Length: 158
Image 1 (cartoon, rainbow, N blue to C red):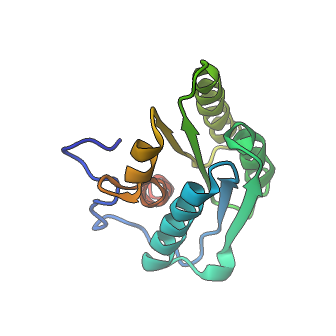
Image 2: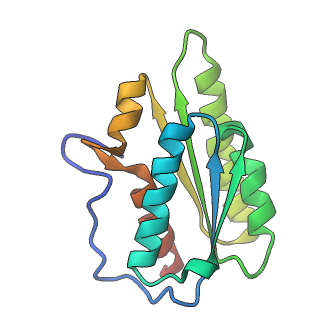
Image 3: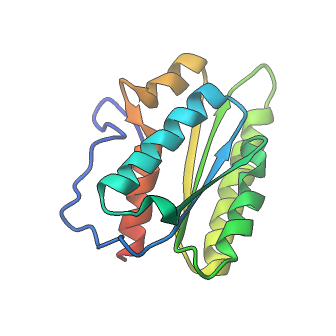
């Protein structure tokens, strides 16, 4: 979580496992694409930086953050996929839709990970404003996509 004390892109990689033979599925929401593309690039580049092979990283898009759960399940069901990283953005609007979407996505992603016994990572940026979302997509708080990729690597080594 980004705070004034922790940047999303800061991490210790000293205990990372070798991921050169691991396969990753990225599920990226198209809604708020100007942000999710940055999250996706951060995750992709982080995986490559730590040894993943480009041909073993599969990027798929879904219409919005609500659909991340089904996208994650469709990837996680394949034995050859070792970890799934879900990336999306939900910005609070005039209604409470964000509460419902955030809750459903968090529960759904958790369920998929437990069902398939593999890391399914919650890379959802949930903010009150567009500015806060941009701050978490390569801005002053780092990149949530980097954090999500790091979480996937760490969980594969668990």
